Length: 64
Image (cartoon, rainbow, N blue to C red; front, side, top):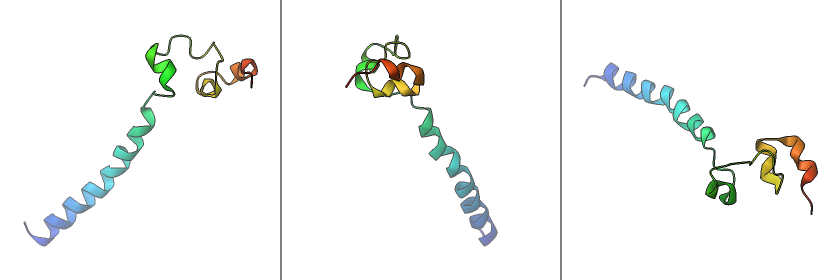
């Protein structure tokens, strides 16, 4: 591989690394309790502070 080929490969890897880092924001695992119920009712129950991700208005139901 010549010099320009190495530079091109390095530039391509650096350019696509942003997409790999941004992909971690699509993980839907907010807490272990809701993960066990497949997030059924996670936005409406208002049991803990992780409710803020799905429904910020449900934080009024959180006690403590």
